[in-house]
Amino acid sequence: MANKMGYLSCLDTVKPVRDAIEVINGKWKLPIIISVMTGNERFTDIQESIPGITPKVLAKELKDLEQHQLIKRVVVDDYPVKILYKPEPYADTLTPIIEALKGWGLNHRKKIFEKE
Amino acid sequence: MANKMGYLSCLDTVKPVRDAIEVINGKWKLPIIISVMTGNERFTDIQESIPGITPKVLAKELKDLEQHQLIKRVVVDDYPVKILYKPEPYADTLTPIIEALKGWGLNHRKKIFEKE
DNA sequence: CATTTCACTTTCCTTTAGGAAAGTACTATA
DNA sequence: TATAGTACTTTCCTAAAGGAAAGTGAAATG
Image (tube, rainbow over all chains, first blue to last red; front, side, top):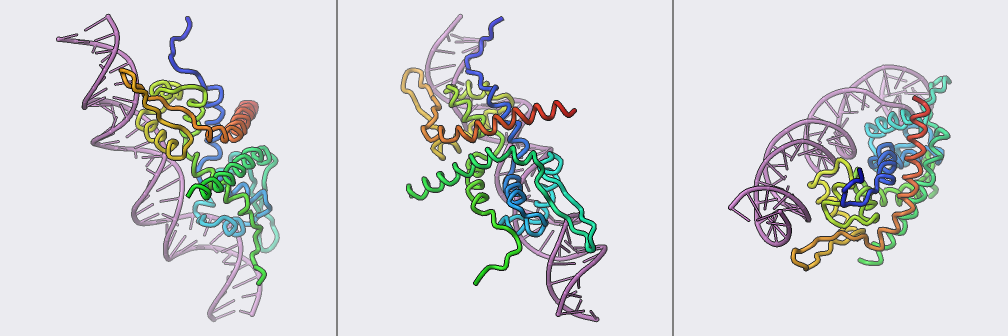
């Protein structure tokens, strides 16, 4: 009944990491969350705060993030109608990930510049 | 000389996060690093420890990770020749990211199951 | 001599991500 | 009346990611 695998199981870590990656995958999701958490609320503001993002990509990613309950789309019925994107409380749970990536990225860039 | 942007700058965070994402992007890189850090050294062992990965993808990602100095490919000149993949010390710097993703993924799965 | 193991590579194919450019419908402002 | 801003959508396209299946060459094992 014992298993005869010759490899070491790492599924305890691999599985949840993959679950997380599925939610925040791609180039743009974390940058958008960061922008919204920083306080950018309008479509155009978010777009301008993230260099290189196109409106098509932004619109698609905003929908994904809404589905995952990380942000919400709020329609304000003034005249003219305003649309605001706000972070959901659940977005705060991503802070440790964002901080870890930020720290690593900062250090990595330093490492690259030292070498070359 | 002041800037007249209407948005809030979040580049201090967005830029390093993007640098990090560029290195560990895709479905497979972190799972492979986790497997190698767990102690899997042989191609076939790594492959079997990560459900769903194909040899083509594994070969390609191992090369990428080697280039980023996260793992090294060691040829052991016994007869028969053995090829071992070992984590580089630099791989350890990814531990906070992996732990953050693992924690988040675990919690996320719990959240999903509670809801539905 | 046949089979198996190991570490891949090769081919073919589909899906997804992403970018460029233009357009749209509405409202506001000069 | 013309121009500009807002929040997108649409079309077209390329590149990269990823998967399935088979093959390869060397060496070991039965």
